[in-house]
Image (cartoon, rainbow, N blue to C red):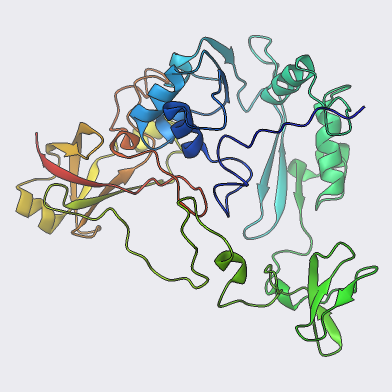
Amino acid sequence: MKAKKIEQPRLDGHGSKYPFSHGSGIYTETVSRILDGKGAYQPKIGMVVFQNLVLSVPGTNNVIEALKKLEYLVVVDTHMSETALMADIVIPGTSYLERYDLNSNWVTWSTLGLRQPVVKPIFGQLPEYDFVAALGKKLDLRNSEGQAWFDNWDYEKYISRELETGAPKISLAQLKALPGATWIDSVGTQYEKFKFEAKMPDQGTVDEKTGLVKDKDGKPAGVKIGEKIYKGFNTPSRKLEFYSEQAAAKKDANGKAIDGLPAYEARDWVPDDKFPLYLVNWKEVHHTHSRTFNNPYLMEIQSWNRLAVNANTAARLGLADGDEIWVESPYGKAKAIARVTEGIHPDVVGWQHGFGHWGFGKVAKGKGTADGQFNVTKSDAVSGMALHKEVCVKVYKA
């Protein structure tokens, strides 16, 4: 018996509102719709696994108010993060010593390393993947054919299948047996893949005018040039497209037609007399997202995110290096410490993302300034990506 199909559209607008969004989700849209109640439905329960939405999503106050509107919030984490502090139930997560992880590197030379549990979880809790599976089994989640997703769940068998069907083509046991439990691709990084030759698909067709090769289902499979078939680019025509008919046929989240050319359009947020400086943020090597700020060793290296201000701008504003300052935007205001430098544009100020915890642990607490509070919870109208740098501020001595 086939399972009942969910008829409602996704709350985050993927597949409907945002034409080129990623299937993993549009969290800024989700937060906004929970907050204003204008989504396809109003969620009642939130489940957050190993994410600190309050400090990670732009528009900190909006995120807090949205989470308050949920009737029930469950958070799985290793720390009492700012999001966990809002939860009705907090499930202890597992550290990297207590669970499996596959650590991949596909940028330079393809490798895949296996992180293995060396101790049992300290509280007897399930690793996150087993927790999700247990919850799915309890909810009797099924696929479109009516088969239970998590019957006979075994994570080791699951990742072994992933390895066997993925690039390594080896089992979990074989990966464990490799030096350092790390698979290294013998081919290495491949470039100009569009030049790779391809085969004519079974029951495939060729458009004699354009050379486009399609499989039996009508999906692009390559491009024929002369007597050979090539992989081509990942475009509808399999050729390099200076004009995208695919994009031009769509509208963005605001209902505006998308230009088929990469045309520049000025943003609706620009510096003015009230907020004369662009505010940007970035990540540095010392920390990962907002998750490493309770590590005393890393905090010894980088313990504060001082606001970078150009030396000429600082002189004009009467600021000196190390001064306590106010940073103010249309959405938030907080104190920070100035870092006067030549290494930033005179019209821009900025700092490292992830600081400003009021939870997460005694080492992290009270260090630096949370950058999300100055921003608005907004998605890019085409991709749905969160806009972390869509704000201007004023800076003045405290």
